[in-house]
Amino acid sequence: MIKFFRKIRQKLLKENKFKSYFFYALGEIILVVIGILIALQINNINENNKKDEIRETYYNQILQDLSKDHQYLKTEIKNLNVNIDLYKTYRANFAKQKNLKALVLSQLKLNYYYPYLKFNTNTIETLQSTGDIKLMPEKIRNKLIDLKNEQNVFISITSGNYDNFAKGLIEATKLGFTPNVILTQKEIGQKSIFKNLNVEANLDEIALIVNAAYNLKNITEIDQVRGFETMLNEINVLFNLINNKLKNPYPSIDRVIDQKIKLEKLLKDGKSIDEVIEIVKKQDKNNSIYTISENYINSLGYAYLNANQKEKAVKIFKLNIELYPKAWNTYDSYGESLLKIGDTLNAIKAYKKSLELNPKNEVAQKIILKLKS
Image 1 (tube, rainbow, N blue to C red):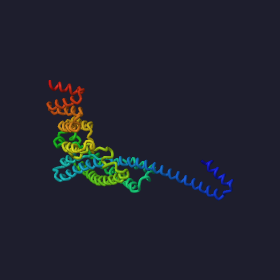
Image 2 (cartoon, helix red, strand yellow):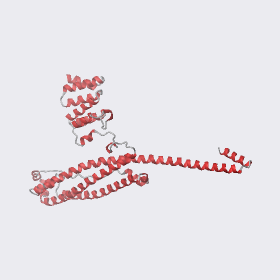
Image 3 (cartoon, helix red, strand yellow):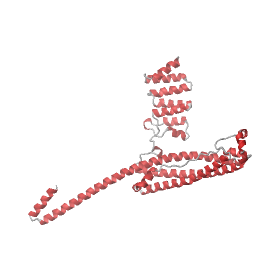
Image 4 (cartoon, one colour):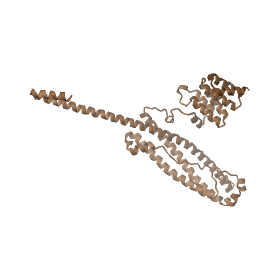
C-alpha cells in the first residue's frame, strides 16, 4: 500500500503537477492522521472495556462481602438483644435481692458472650492498596470508604470495652465468681471448696466488680445494636447502587451469596415447620426463590431425624414426596421416618411405593419383608 502511494507521488512529480502533488500529499497526511485517531479510539475503547470488566469483577466481589456482613450483622443483633434482655431482667430484679449471695447468683445468669468484630473488607482494602478505588464512581467510592472507616472505629471502641469487661470478670473469678455456672445457695453451702476459699467473704467485692463489668458490657451492646442497624442501612444503600450498576441481577442482598434462600433462614426467622411447608407449597417449583431441591429437602429431613425431632422430620419428608412424587428415594426416606415414630403400616406403604418406582431398591425389599414378618 505504501509503494502504491509512493508511485502516485512520483508520477505527479514527473508530470510537474505540483499543485495536485501538494493536495495529494496533504490528503495522504490527513488519512494517516485519521488512521492514527481511529487506532487511538479503538485502543481507548479496548482500555475502557478492560476497565469495565475489572470494575464489574470488583462490583461482584464487593456484593459478596456486603452480603456476608449483612448476614453477620443480623445474627449479631439477635445475639446482642438476647444479652440486653437478660441484663434488663437482672436490673429489674436488682433491688429485690434479699442478700449479697442472692445478688451474685442472679449475676451468674447473665451471658458473658461478646463478639470480637471482623468485617469482610478484603475487596475495599485491595481497591485502596492497588489504587483501583478510582475505578469506582464517586458516590459508591465515598460510601465504601465511609463504611470501612465506621467499621474500624467500631472495632476499636468495642474491643477496648470488651477487654475491660473481660478483665473485670477475671478479677471476679479470682474471688470465686463462676460465670455461666449457676449454683444454688444450698449447693454453695455444701461444696467444701467454697468454704475453704472463703468465697462468701468476697461476695460484696464480687457483686460490685461483676455489676460494673456487665454495666459496661450492656452499654456497649446497646451502642452496637444501634451501630449495626445503621450499618445494615448503609450496606443496603450500597447494595442497591452496585446492583443497579450490574443491571439488577439480584432481587435482594440475601440472594447474593446463594441465589436461592434456604429454608433454614425461614426457621431462624421464627417460622414454624408447618408455616415453612405452606410457604414452599405456594412456590412455583420450577421458579422458587427458596432452595427446594429433592436432595436439599431430604438432607433437612435427616437433620431433624438425627436431632431426634421425629415429627418434624416426618413432615419434611412428606413435603418431599408431594413435591417429587416420582422420586423413589423420597418415599424411602419418608418410610424410614414413619418407622421412627412407630407408624409401621404407612411405613410399609411408603417403602412399597419406593420399590414400585425403583425395583432395584434392595433396602426397601429387605425392610418390607422384615416388617411383614
